[in-house]
Amino acid sequence: MAVELILLIRRCCHLCHDMEVALGPLAAEFGATVTMLDIDSDPCLEAKYDELVPVLMHGENELCHYFLDEPKTREYLAGIR
Image (cartoon, rainbow, N blue to C red; front, side):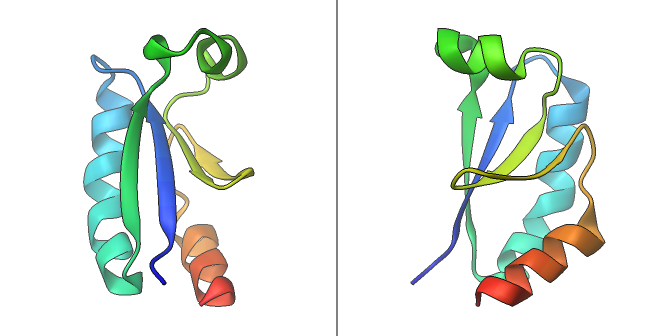
């Protein structure tokens, strides 16, 4: 079963784009899917994550925000394999 990661973003956010690009190879390595979710389309998400985007999530687990923490994300993905 593939792991689904959620990347909380804003459309005009350069950090969000940077994390999406950086996450691509890591997600491919672990066979994970990445779903992009624009927080501006959901008032609850916007209220909770307004200044933190991008935020990488797996379920309720926040893996990192602002920048991809590759070592932490790699360790997390290896642990749930």
